[in-house]
Image 1 (cartoon, one colour):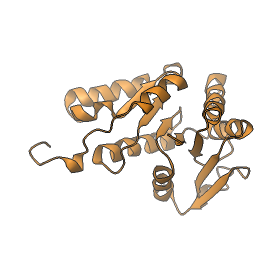
Image 2 (tube, one colour):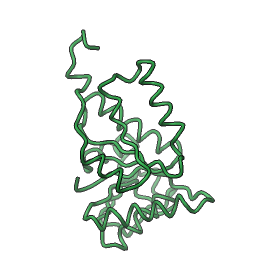
Image 3 (cartoon, one colour):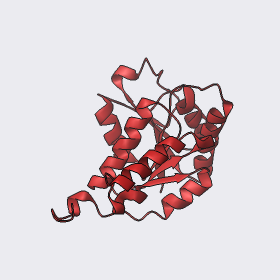
Image 4 (cartoon, helix red, strand yellow):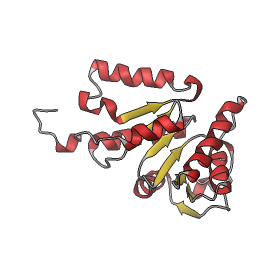
Length: 193
């Protein structure tokens, strides 16, 4: 994995653990020689990841929709900044530019990005690892929901491992490096579905 797409919020929660972790992720990836692909903003967790990676001499590529350039206050100090027409183009370019995905805490936009990465992995649109950094148990309810979807049968057994979860960056990167792509839905026969 040479570059990872980082999904996270453009907000700064009151608890400093979130922003501190975002900085640690940006710095940690840069120190490992891994580039960052992210939403292109300079605020919140997004900005913290980018600034820390840049400070550690890492490559940071931002992808931001034109309509959000002003709203998210586009980061102008990046290695590259791509302005795209909308969210669909943003997520498609994330997928094209990155070798995997890491989700930090965030809101609805972050969830949209995570679920699309998982959906595309199930369908076979990509075979890249999809990681979730579960900071201070933030994603415990989401992980429980993923498990519930699998127990009920909405997530197929062979896809249950697509969501890679860890509480530390080292642990997450190790699991992502060991990722073996699942058999995609498009590769299955009608009888298997």
